[in-house]
Length: 67
Image 1 (cartoon, rainbow, N blue to C red):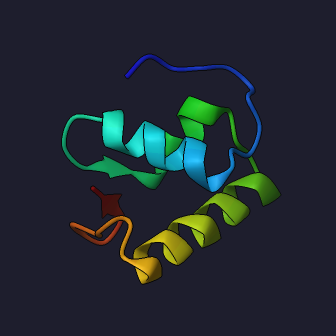
Image 2 (cartoon, rainbow, N blue to C red; image 1 turned 90 degrees about the horizontal axis):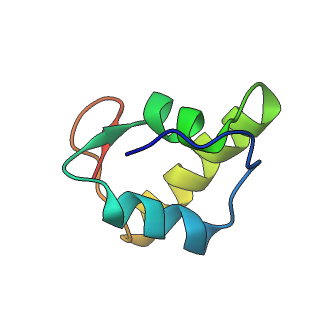
């Protein structure tokens, strides 16, 4: 996936679209880099990923990877 610059914290729909477009499992770091997230935005993104996992929209494939 090409790295995008400073898009800010995405909404759930945008995040799901990005994750579905990714080939295979992708880590938190790659998601944060793709959206240019740092600090508090990165923590919010991790919380959003946890919510999506709890809802069953995505699945964890490892300690830090999601699919």
